[in-house]
Image 1 (cartoon, rainbow, N blue to C red):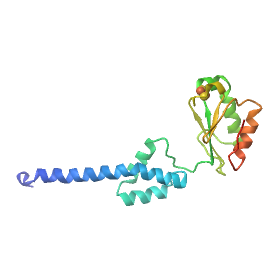
Image 2 (cartoon, rainbow, N blue to C red; image 1 turned 90 degrees about the horizontal axis):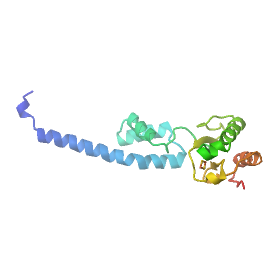
Image 3 (tube, helix red, strand yellow; image 1 turned 60 degrees about the horizontal axis):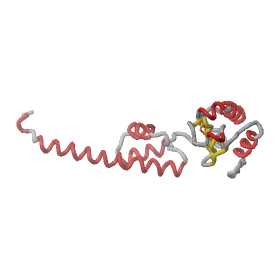
Image 4 (spheres, protein in one colour; image 1 turned 180 degrees about the horizontal axis):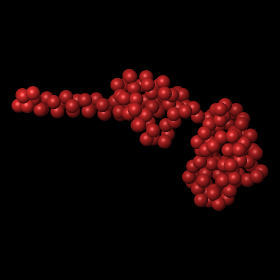
Length: 167
Ligand code: FES
């Protein structure tokens, strides 16, 4: 190849255009991933494959972007997302016992979802209600002072189809 005949400006222009288009597509990725997760509750593999073809982005790149953000999930989630606070105040006031009781009752580990999709069990750092320790959140609701009496109420509220309040 005659190096003198290469139009460097043109080549840079081509690469620049490619980078721009690639960036544009990557910019679209996050909002689209949010929409998919809103529709399905998680990011199904088939949906990501279709997205990869539509945007012309490698599937590995889509997974890499999605897995960077903790709010994206790659498997179905429970109707109730229960997060037991493991912050210091909750830890001191028995959060581990609450967590163990939920794990034992629903037969799942932290990060898992029951087969019937009733519950996904997670832990969380301080949720800002230390005065009510030990605390758990059930979807958007905060349940505090989970002692021996309240634990069965919490479990039965999780098992109910509709949202139920635990006093
Ligand atoms: S440590 Fe649990 S709410 Fe603050």
